[in-house]
Image (cartoon, rainbow, N blue to C red):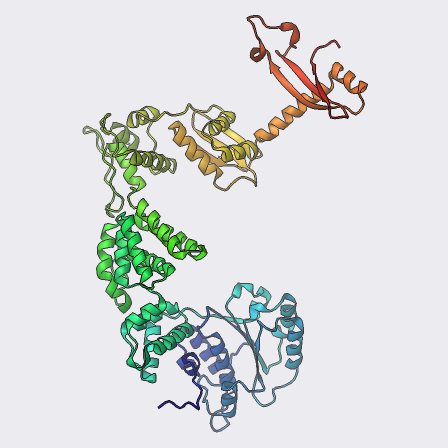
Length: 637
């Protein structure tokens, strides 16, 4: 019968380690501290960092007990195994030792708090061997507080030790880090967590299924305290009957592993409707949409590991059960498919976290993933375009190396080049690809793959023969032609950046090479997009290189200089000067070049209205009242 007079202590507090031997998963730190205490080489300050629940504050208290323990007889010295019976061990365990000062920097961040601390450093310990200052979440201290601590931290009295703990080591100034011995507490492996939780459950007299232990250890994510809190919750959920796997799965919102495999296979088969249906069933069964995507991400990683190393995860009891179903997937799925699934799921998890309706966001992620599952890989596309083969589904392709491109029968492999093989490959002129969607995908992905240069681009004649229906643009002969080409294809944003943010250094139309210097306002991928789109539109490979040379002015700057020169030339014209002098306050509003070829209304040009440059100048002069009028560029008023 439970004693109601004794308050219940949660497992995380009840089974907190009291000695270094009880700390799990931190062997390197325990070995270093044990050797330092045994040899008397004890630093004046330690800083412990790591994720929550790995034992930072617990280790700090063990250090305080180890340095101040006097043994049961009162005559002992610093030890790696505190007795737990002397007055100092008991007082520190009960958080009431006068010489062990524990401070929470999250609530005491100011410089005045640190000044009070440094004032106390000057006094010797009251009863213990060392005065220990434990500062938790030390990264929360203000800049002035850190500065006030520096001098004391560097040269403390011999009987004062500092122990800092933080989860965000990057926020601690390097001047503080350089004065401390740093220990990074790593995540505790799953197998150690499972064994630790099994011992605790046995000590509590609770029967717990191995599958439930595995789920709790996975959800703990390397944090001992998080796992103990989940174990406490699972025991409260199941009662005295014992902890089973299914209730724990419902408590954590985790889908059944077999159902996750079914969903994974359905998505990569391209069955969007089936994937959405399975996702709805998991959601109605209590699974968290974000956890489902996380499980799919973990499964993608596991299948990729098996593909690269078939023995990956061997001996792990939590992964042995997945190997049977994962190995056929690893043998069937190609590496590009797995990489694409990883990237889309990783992005999808972020979308689900930010979405107002996580279930709907997760369903849309699965729809996108199922849709691209039908798309072939770039290597298959190039091979299909070159050989005239039907485009195969990417999900059905295996990890086998791609077959070599077809070559003429009379040529040996050593005598044929990739360009010759691609150009000479037979392809019926009347046999299109499977459908327009595959054709568009093949064209885009195939040209993009050529732009990245895994396979050389065939000459224009061969390209026209391979894809006869694609109308290619003529080769641009200067940078202005490129800007007009982007204007033609309605790439307004890139056209604006090319106009305003690119200094041309070199241009070679025959070699298809451009060197330029983008300004700070240009997008990072401007040169990549420029080369890719030019290659796609012209059918010839273009290389765009970034240069550090000054280069020519941007087209916007050149146009501004031209307009300024024309304006200055017009302002110096006698007629314009006469108008400006006659009407004080008048300004030149605009200058327009009117070409005779564009304005002639008959077979004979009106030569008397033109100057030696072949155009007449219309100058718009605005007076001080906002009215304006045009005057012709004649020499006589």
